[in-house]
Amino acid sequence: MEKEFVLKIEHSSKHFDAVKVFEGLSLQLKANEIVAILGPSGCGKSTLLRCIVGLEKADSGTILIAHHRGTESIGYLFQNPILYPHLNTAGNIALGFSERLTKQEKKARIEQELISVELGGFETRAVESLSGGEAQRVALVRALLGDPKVLLLDEPFSALDLETRRSLAVKTRQWLKQRSIASIHVTHDPEEAELIADRVITWDSMIAANEEE
Image (cartoon, rainbow, N blue to C red; front, top):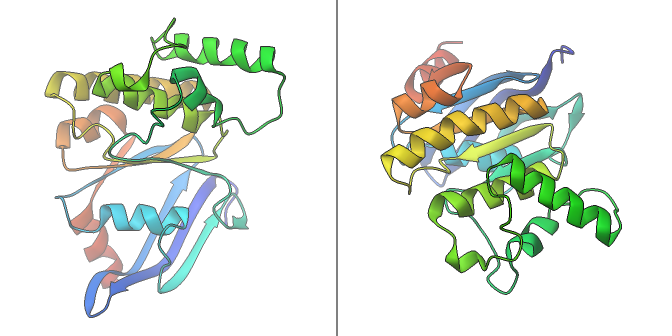
């Protein structure tokens, strides 16, 4: 794989019994690039992400991440944020640390990260009291603390109101660029795709291009 690419999918296929989700699909993601995959719900976008991260197994093809096979360097943000109600905001974020830090170092880092996503002072908040946008930002901070080379965004704003969705798309782009993290964002919203991405690919055109090869 060329050095400039952090993710390369080659001739990947996925079927569920007799149903073809995608076949012979190839995709390359450059370092620090944000790619949006645009398509209707149920077309297979989320299945592709699940294959990349290892939650589903592709039937064929290869997935290469930063010159290695495997999914250790991939973060994943789900459509609905997965937060644990028995932990407060800081407790949920602490689950994302990829390095060993002292208690005080973790506390300072969590405070810093919450400020960076405009949630300063939310450390002791019960996650059940958070709005949808706030909860998704907490989940994003936790994902970023894992220092991923690639972050997969699986329609993370789709359950939010239009204004919040647009605002978070713009802000998430800023946060990813500040950290130099490459990302694939899947969505059914064309405007959201344009706001967050460097490059927008429609699902139909991607499938058609790969079928023609």
